[in-house]
Image (cartoon, rainbow, N blue to C red):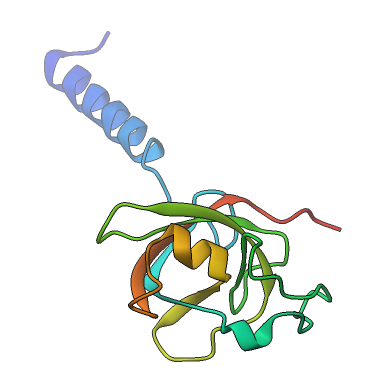
Length: 134
């Protein structure tokens, strides 16, 4: 039979174990829910038709983006926190290679975020759908 103090120490230990097992961990790199914050830029019109790292040709009217390491085909949501506007894009290229920038967007995506005048703007990026594993 459990005595009063032993019951509460047992109950307290059980509660502590339950609470620690419920703690949320951050999603791994590239997995659904993975997030990054930083700056976004967008592709110049001069790049229209150039090959991207995935082999496709850049089309300014598509919802595409470049990221340094996310696998090609990863779908991300990019939010401009200054105005709340967002766009969903697919990672198709590598870059940007400028310190502090986390993503390069197609012209279409940049327009959706209302960042055309600024050229570079702070953003929050979240993985919605990881790339398919081959």
